[in-house]
Length: 364
Image (cartoon, rainbow, N blue to C red; front, side, top):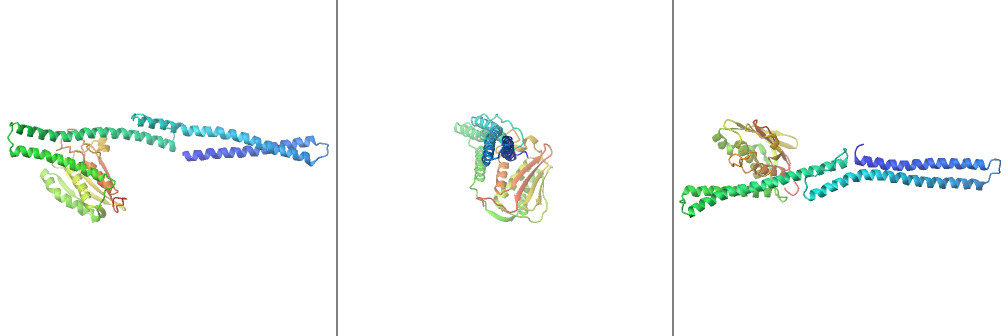
């Protein structure tokens, strides 16, 4: 029994048992001692009931007093030991939490054992690690948002300034360039707005029973020309109908984002395939590609907003880093989950688990 509950139960059981054992032994000892005293005092004498009663009463009283004194001693000693064992890690965790509240996220609590207190300590350490990670992501996201906004704004500003100063003529080509940058800003703001909506607890899904294989095929067919233009094969594995409760529009966006990602990172001559694996309570949709893959150290970061494995910040290759974040938000809103596996140079596989029956409180 390694659990804290079991150890506490054992400690208090030992205390109670010790008191009962002491009381029993003391009663036996004192009773026996006083009977021996009574026998020695009344030897060759007339026995009176009064003398017997006095000795018997003394035996009982002394037994009770000794039992009380020793029981109190045992209780105090065991209670101090148990309290120290419980409070020491709690005090350590309290100090750690106070340091974390002051901004020192590198502090850690000492973890020993395998009980519930140890689990609490490990959870606190994990929380500190997650806070460090979130702080890093916040700083990265701030820098990325600034970059994503600064680049098109700088382009528009320089173009318009040149036109106003008479350096450039406002030709349709130059105006079209400005328009493209405005569109880029519009798309970024739209993605951020969409992501905020998806992560809202008040999100309402328009759930209907839909054949997910047919939905995937429709969106794949709509994008097939892009694959053909780049010379990448797109294969949707034939599958029997699989009806699930989904929001068709939002789940269609999941398919579109995954296929766009796969196409972006798959070179000419490569292949992107979609497979289905029905289960009892969910359906697994796999989107595989034979593209450049992803570094294993980056797998846990790919669903964070604005994260891109492509460090050049080139939107043609790296994108804005919101697509997979939106995918995760939509899938989790349906009560499902999404995983990504891959190896650099050996392609990527995205696994989307969609429940057959979506049950999300306040979202359906």
